[in-house]
Length: 315
Image (cartoon, rainbow, N blue to C red; front, side):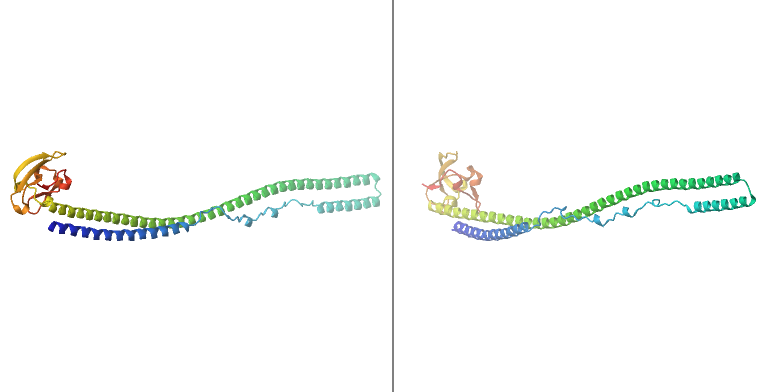
């Protein structure tokens, strides 16, 4: 009865443990499902993948081309004829005065001719001076035009380089900004997803552990029920594993056979009738595998006959 009571208590305890473990497993499963839904929603709401080069603004139009403001300072250079005209005028006056003096003095015509030739030569020198100035001016204009073209070309190159540099700077700044914003959002969302996934993994592990505890409790209950059945069967056939199988408590021991696994089978009587009256058939606890031996509190061995190929019977 004590064995039956202990087995029954163990079975009840196992059932209670299995129920508790089942509740924990269900709670963990519900938590994992809720976290999975949350993870799905987070993944659906993640930012779209962007093209950081899209909508790049070009501000190169703000750069002005100043080449149109350049000019050739020698383009409109004029010939200075005022001094030459004044010199020619003075020569004409001097010639007229000389002629008047010659007429008054009655000089010959040869002297007048000589003066006319001198006046002509003077005017030729004035004309040569004007042509020389014109040649110099032409050279200045040509040099000025060449310098102007070089300046325009240099300015055009500067403006073009500035436009390209500004456009490149703007594109790089815009792309870098977009990449930074996208990267930061992606990092934060990734961290959030990782946290939720870790929580899901934890909940799933809790469920697995609870299910394992439930299975262990059920297994313990089944074992307890088996012990109850074994105890009842033993009581029915004369004691079974509830009766001592220790050689020290037996008498009239006779070898009567051998089991298929090679265990000796004996017939015997108990020295003390409280363990059973009559002749019994069974084994000696010191000859069987240790896993089938049950150490009792009274110091005498019992045998779990369910683990060997021999039956305990009352003959």
